[in-house]
Image 1 (cartoon, protein in one colour):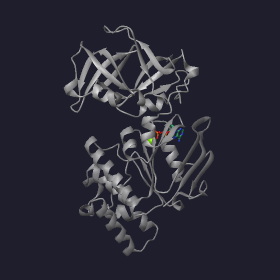
Image 2 (cartoon, rainbow, N blue to C red; image 1 turned 135 degrees about the vertical axis):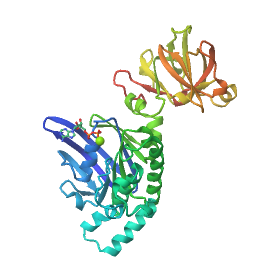
Image 3 (cartoon, helix red, strand yellow; image 1 turned 120 degrees about the vertical axis):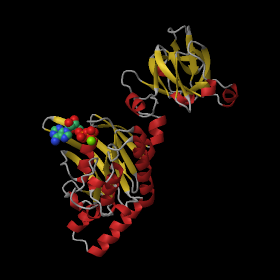
Image 4 (cartoon, helix red, strand yellow; image 1 turned 90 degrees about the horizontal axis):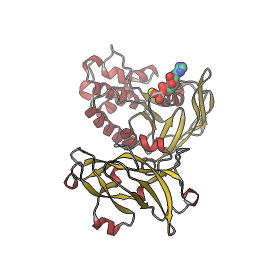
Length: 375
Ligand code: ADP
Ligand code: MG
């Protein structure tokens, strides 16, 4: 059980700054996901926590103790790598227990831990095999078993599922979640997959070019993204971004945009809910309106009657993409292509004008210059 604090952590290779002052603070038992595209510095940060990389500036603290100069084996952490890093000539059982063997743990206790981990990961029938005789998913479990037997203060995972096929990845994701619920050990998990981040994390840190863009719960990141980068990175299909102008009509703030393409004419005005009342300085100026596809759907007057944030408008349908559960409906708003998520039974045909509604209570506004969220 451990807390983890990262204070102004920096990493440079020569003149190149890889991490530019990272601040993160984890409570005991949290599941932190470091999310970002390849090359943004996720593994570097994880390796700094593990002690496998030196720290150019700042501090890493485990249980309020600075560990910058503590050797990896004395940090009481266990790491699972993307490559699994199993010993090819050792059996599964020996692979799992080898770290304990190196630490001179007595055989009885070692075997007890190996058995327990193997049962938990459902690989107890594979203990005498060599890694070459295992599937990718089984190898992944062995790598996790090796971390489990250490019973560490913190688990570190570096893209542990990226070598697995899509179906297995989803299964193992659930396994890792169950494992965390059961062990309640602090975990730090690196991935570029936003769904893994959303499903596993108690908090997500989204990195870009060695900087944290937002550090918050998955729900907060999804509903109140700190900037356009975060908004576009999390969610599939991605958030729609529409250039719009802030207007004040009789004391009520709203946004408006022109429609020009595909037979659409005239301007659309969408009032904002009451909480967007600090927009005075933005009146007459351009903003980026962010709308998640699932908050834009076919018009239902019954729902509009119950929720004043739902705003109706009409628009011509361009393309339909049925996904089964819903039909992605492409329309044009403010000159941008926008995706609405529509129930298949309510979808219109391409070329038809359809009635939509958008939940402006869930809309985000961004400054087009700084790309930061407005209020
Ligand atoms: P991620 O895990 O997010 O894909 P990494 O942390 O592996 O990213 O790498 C971040 C950046 O640091 C990359 O641009 C990478 O090229 C650079 N980098 C990593 N290791 C070294 C190194 N030993 N020397 C120089 N640059 C490195
Ligand atoms: Mg990496």
